[in-house]
Image 1 (cartoon, helix red, strand yellow):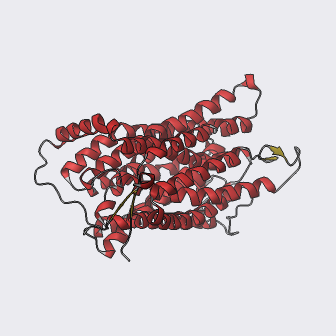
Image 2 (cartoon, rainbow, N blue to C red):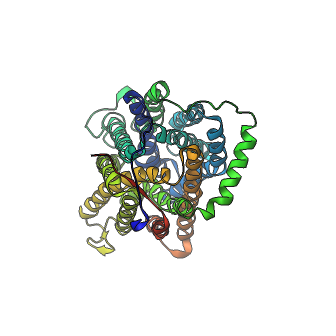
Image 3 (tube, rainbow, N blue to C red):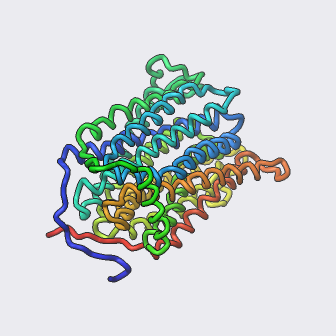
Length: 471
């Protein structure tokens, strides 16, 4: 087998109805505004710039909150995944965690500018991450039962692309009709905010929370109504005990399954690097480049457009070349983009000074927009290909447990990544270093590069099956 890849004919596998497949794909459409509006382009930058005492502290606090939410998933997802495989249906799990995520997103409305008590808000942010990300674990586990393996790459890529379009539309709604500049009182489209939202109180930015909750609640319904679920197993007695036993066997045998083990460790690092890049990109732009929410939103619109296109083309490349090749190419591209982002300030590009203090140059902004477009395209592709690469590592009877371990491997560094950024940012923000908050932010996000490099180093040990569609 050349390059460790396996080619296999298409087996006679069950296929869900067209309506059921679209229902499953709409989950990504439903969930993407959480990542677009809350985690990356609207609420997180608003939190860092207007709720926290200063941008460096905001980056630090957001890192702790997101990290704790990821840590809770890391502790429990493999166990619940193993239990779900034994009991059968995934939808009840999706519903339970969706309720937590929706309630937490709605509560973000109450995060007012300059508020003094931030403890409860940290809990809400952690619960939002916990609920929304956990629901995705069980939704992803339904994927292998919908189409033959030969079509999984395109299915995953198309779903990610659809999700990016959903994120794009939700972002346009917020920026065009809700979020307004406090100085001008106008939105990106030059309109007054709808629903009487007060720009001075940043109600348009805060409304991203309730909008995310409503969007998710509406668009997740087709998945619940039309997508076929795994049948309930005849006997579920002792499911918790059996699930723990099965998970124990998997963990004991995992080091001997070199490809599966290497993939989980590799993806743990490169996915967390990508998540950190998404999470702190908007915060970085607000603190280092001095961007407004509207500028960050334009950045998000471009990234979501290219993300949709990138995910779709990534699905085609996945089907043709295999998911491992797609993951490796995208990880290299994202590493280069990360270096470009860190090297860009309002006066520098690639660490080269292009303007002195007080001068204005558009080159840093243009550079950051270009980086955002490439990050969107490569990020969409790598996430879609990672789902199919995981399916290549296990049989369908273990797929929910596998996605639980996938969540564990990702969340293990999803809390390490943000917390590392928080610690590095706090360390270099000390008065002894004499650095500005902006310079502390720049240095603070450097752990992202190390995470990408480690993930890339482990990919050669991962096998990728390439399934050819019949002519």
